[in-house]
Length: 113
Image (cartoon, rainbow, N blue to C red; front, side, top):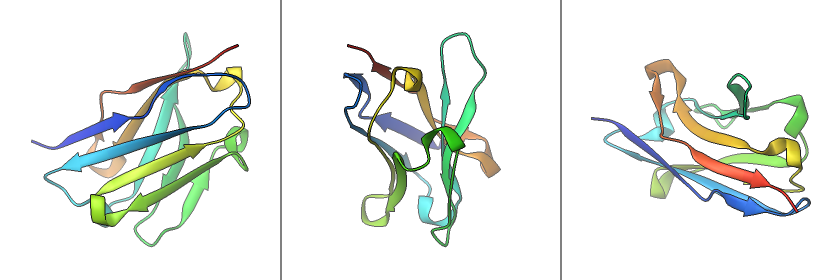
């Protein structure tokens, strides 16, 4: 059974940084496009960033210039570096391999003073 496990969420002040990590078991993430999604309270889930097998990245307009998605193939993980965090970034963040409909359990990110 494929598992995607997110970690790195937490409470941070506005302007702060967090790094999310998504670790996979039983599949090699390097062979799939992977993405980070988020679901703010009371809102729909939305794509934050994705990374293709060749390293091509895509970002939501709201996070461009602040978030960076990357891979660590040696650790079979996908990372999301989040800088200059804003209160509106508060959400549950999910890792996904969309083509296989694999999803992690989510990790809470709260940006508040």
